[in-house]
Image (cartoon, rainbow, N blue to C red; front, top):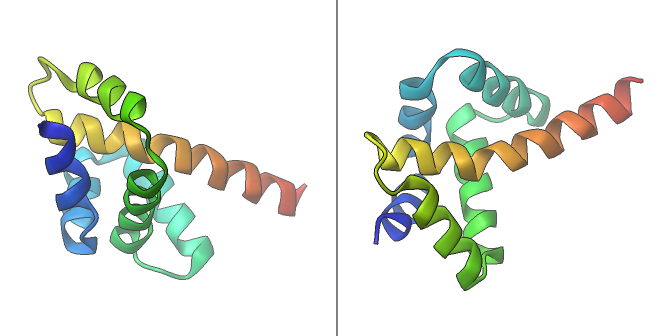
Length: 100
């Protein structure tokens, strides 16, 4: 199952860092910004998001993720991004709450 590969591999900070770099662009900037606010590397921040997803995910969450990445050219990167985006949204809300 691709989803298990994603959560197992991307729970490693070095793999997560490589995934962030591979995706690049605005996504990578947002991850780096969120990580900077926590005082950690982007890979550590992203791996933590994956670990939190893995610990909280129910079977339905994993099935939904599996459906979302099915047929993707790069399912691991697509799934990684889908896992990390909600954590980025939460980090953005927290940053906005403290600045404004």
